[in-house]
Length: 116
Length: 111
Image 1 (cartoon, helix red, strand yellow):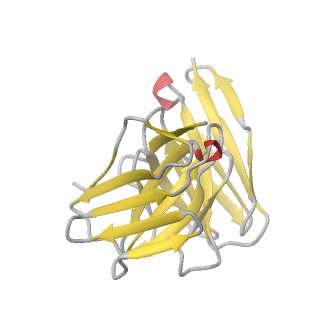
Image 2 (cartoon, each protein chain N blue to C red):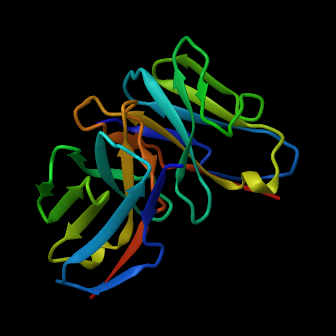
Image 3 (cartoon, rainbow over the protein chains, first blue to last red):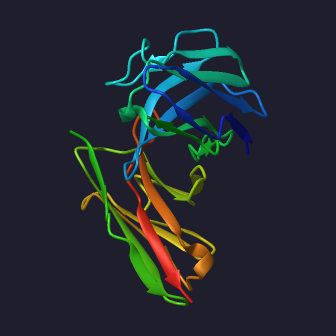
């Protein structure tokens, strides 16, 4: 299993500002994933972060809006830039479990952002 | 486009009954299908995985079926308890093994 800590757990932000979310894992992992969960919606993958390379973004998400850092095998950050109310959402960090035959994902508790 | 559909209406059942949740998908050939549980204010927690060549998987009070012809999975909780109340997410993964999630169905078990 993997234990994932996210900070902040929640925040209220002003339009036009940026916020960085931190994700710390208790073990070394190759791939880390960032998801967004908007109210009443499914989890949507924003990007996959690999240590030592640029993050891979999904369709509809761009690096300028969601820059990601992955400085080592246990840590990643996601920045939500130039926020608007549409960015109000829960942002979740996730890693894949060591038991690759299950494809199990472990999630952090999420960071709930409200943009005014 | 790929679509995963889960009933958006909450499922209300009495304690002790079997809860059955449905996941339908279109335009997708998944290698496997997963079910997760999500409690309010928490991240999802993995429950079960079933592969494309498997028809049924069980774990304690949980049972999952997978019909690739119907493009449907059923998730059963037998002898349901109020503590089973949560949102249950269906997720499918193809060759990349990175799951795509449905919106989830809320289950409410009444004592």
